[in-house]
Amino acid sequence: MTLTGLHTVNAPAQTIWNMMMDPDALARITPGITTLERVDADNYKAIAVVKIGPVSSAFTGKLQVTDRVEPESFKLVVQQTSKVGTAHAIVDMHLKAISKTKTEVSFTGGVKLTGTLAIMGGRVIAPVANMLSRQFFEELEKEVNA
Image 1 (cartoon, rainbow, N blue to C red):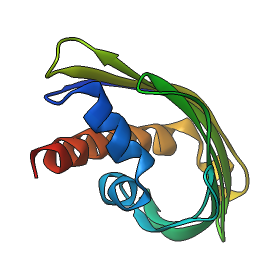
Image 2: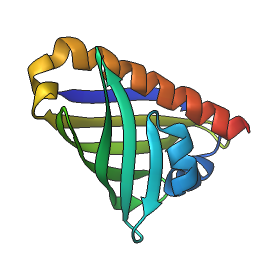
Image 3: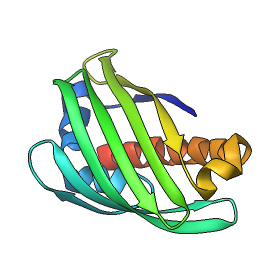
């Protein structure tokens, strides 16, 4: 399954970069994240609770930040496991300064699912992914304005 999103945020690219590199801020703006604990400079333990269709499940695993080009781009590698299956995602994040006070934030990536998650298929998963993407950008705006 492919993931994409694009949103213009009223904040400088460096401000958004700093926020996304801060595990506490990242946990606040990422829907479903209940715990994001730094293991080292690039790796985190993550727990997320996500409702997918009729199923709600806690996912545990790791998140890795790679390929950093401050303040323009980075890659997120996510591996999560739950009782309903596993999710492995690689997402490229891009921050493009439109002006000194506006930044275009975009992401593209893919997710591989196993177990019940894979059986549910795109009809159920895609709307949830779109909803989580919208929530991420809403929470990013709130965090910037806080």
